Image 1: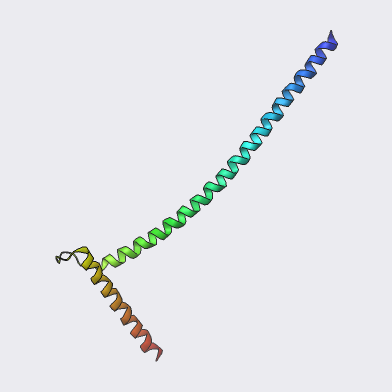
Image 2: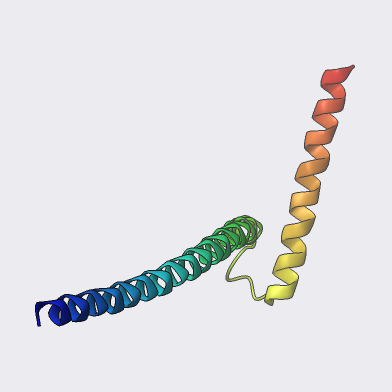
Length: 104
């Protein structure tokens, strides 16, 4: 009788060990999947941060160009932007002339 109990106990232990190994393998696979997903999300996040940085730089450039636009003079926004571009170009030409004079 004692022999049957030992055999049953060993059988039960084998079954439980098999279940534990199966759970371990599933957990290991899930861990690998989650790690890969995390790496992909980190990469996407980095790309979005770079895109955000570029957009912020564009916004700053836009703000700077609009800073030259005069308000309240009755012109529409297209004319104001055109005038601002002309002013910026004029300033750049003056800077170029100053650099040319310094190089002489």
